[in-house]
Length: 264
Image (tube, rainbow, N blue to C red; front, side):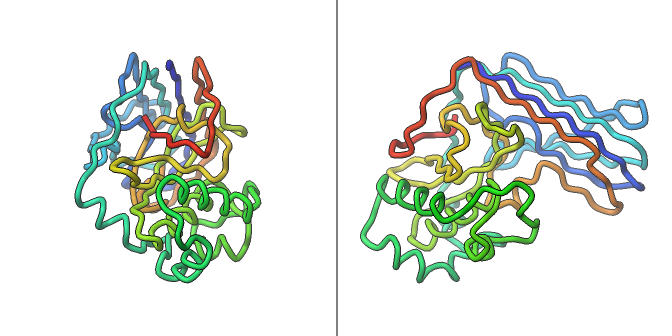
C-alpha cells in the first residue's frame, strides 16, 4: 500500500518559546521520501530530533517571536513492522491516566461488558462507544476526559479514543492512544485512535469508524492526548493561524470492525 501524508502549520509566536512538534511518521516506517521545513520570519530553522521508546519522533527547537510556517510530507511504501511490545507497556497502559479515568469507569465497564473477552470485547467496547456518542466537531475542550465525554455524549476522535481506552483498562486490557495520519478521513485532519493489547499484539480500535484502520500511519503513541499532541510550547503564547493535513492511499481497504487490525 502506497500512502502519502503531509501537514502544514502557520503560527504567530508572541515571544521566545520552547516548542515540540510531533508531525513526522513514527520511526520504522518504510519511507520512499520525507521532508520537514520550518521557517521563521523567512529564515529556516533546524530542529533537533528525539525518538521515544515507541518510535515517536519529536522535533524540538527554541524559537523567537514572529510568523512561523511548518511543512512536513512523507511517502510511505508498503507496511512497516508491527510496533515493538515492551513489558513496561503492560504496566503503564493498565493504569488510569490524565484523560482516561479507568478507575472511575470501572463499575460501568464491568456492568456493560462482564464475561466478554478477546476480539469480542474490542468489538463490543468500540460499538458501545460509537452508539453512545455523537461526533460533533468543536465540541471537545482540551480538559475533557473520558468521564466528561460519556456524560456529554459527544466529542471528536480523541474523546472517542479516551473512552475506549478507559473502559478497556477498567477491564484489565492494556490500552493506549495513537496519533495517526488517516487516509479516507473526512473532514481531513490529524486523527486519534485506541490500541488494545490482545492475543500478544496491539490492535487498533476506532469507535468513530471514520477511516479504515489498515491504512492508518502512526505518528506518536502514549497514555492519552497529553502524550501525543502535535504541537507543545512553553514560555510564550502562540496562535495557530492555519492547519492543513492530507493523507491519501493508493487503495483504501474495506474495514470490518469485527476483525482485528494493526496500525502498520
